[in-house]
Amino acid sequence: MDSTAFEVIERLSEPLTVQVNSSSALVEGMSKAASAIDRERAKRIKKDDQGPRKPGLDQVPLPERVPLQITPWELLATFARATTLARQGRGRGLAEHWQGLKYCRAFAGDRHGSLRLTTDGKAPELSYRAMQARELGRAFGLSVAERAIRERFPDHMVSIIDAEIALLPGFARTKPAGTLGARPRPDFLLEAWRPGEGSRIFVVTVNGNHQAVTAKTSPSSRTTYRQLARGSERVERFHIGQWNNTPALLTSTEFLASAGVTVHLLHAGGGVVLPVRPASGTGTADTAIGRRAQPYVDSVAVPTKRGAARHNAFLIPEKDLSWFGRLIARAHAAGQLSLAGGGETVGRYLIAEQGGKYFSETTYAGTASVHDAEASFANAKYVGTDQVFRINGRRIEAFSGMATDLYDLLVAGRVEEYRRQAYERRMDRPAPNDVGHWGATSFRPDGTALAIRLVQG
Image 1: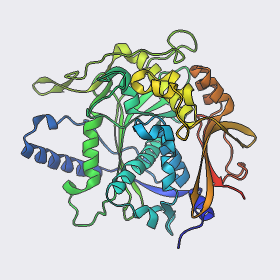
Image 2 (image 1 turned 90 degrees about the horizontal axis):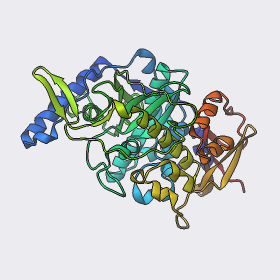
Image 3 (image 1 turned 90 degrees about the vertical axis):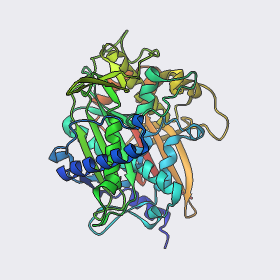
Image 4 (image 1 turned 135 degrees about the horizontal axis):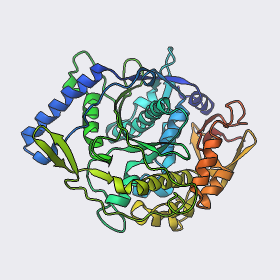
């Protein structure tokens, strides 16, 4: 029997357990899968197919692999925040971040409180099933990766930046649209930052699969191991400052795992820290960035027993680290505004190759997501955009936005001041029981909010 809309929203706000696996057995399984992938490639005789993998991948520390307690709505909110600037073409004008709403009925808890897919969640077939694995893989993988970074830097903020958006200003192959082509790369960059300090950047890969693992499933054919092996290749194609100094987090989410939805996690260390920016004036993220033409072919020297071998990769040279730090901060600001339906104001933070022209133009009726909605949570005002849809005939409203004063700072181009104020207020968020008639909510320290409720009447 179908759940009522009220029951669906109730489930979205119920804290559930997501299993996290990170172990030496996972490292071993990934290694076996990598060897199988190499054998398959050798049969095709395509030398260019095979690239180096990230060295030193290992299990994460114990605090980062305990089960994750999270609500389904927080998971969908993470997916929404990660896709506000996704370059999906036709969908961007319809507000990419609302794509997660189709999964409102996909989650439920079992009798142990572990998160599992509902019957609706298991229903997708063919290409839609692959899309679900890809999209929900982002939600679960990023949530676990964020938790890992907060364990390491508890007094920092964590921002999500689409890797493509971060790389286009330095490596776009054509103008004006800009493209990275089919070059392998990580999925996201996570920035751990605090005003007055240099940011730390983590490269992240996120994957998902619906494989039902049995005792007969070999390591070389297990999808999770193969996804991690391929993720290892993709993170090795991106370096900041110098080779192998950029920390990485690799995730693969099994949606049909016997213990409930399980995120498999591996990491590699690194010590890169971006330069500290001044609080005001030249050199801040308030100042627009320009395009850089960075080399990709043979850009990185990898030590070998015979000296050094060069391979193709996205390398941000040390001389451009200050530029890259500003780029990251401005890309995050653009994502915040887009989440709140910032419209034309989003374009001020993006260059042409990133899609700045698109956001700077007026869109046609029916596709624009504009800051035309307001909401109050615990007497704090938020501005943003909304989406009204139906669950079993009942009208549902979803809201996404930012605290109004923080939003105004970004509209005015004051990125550094926004960061300072957001950091100072990072602990000041509405409590779950102080959100009025909203059924499920998600508030982040950066001042953004996503909420959902039944439409009355």
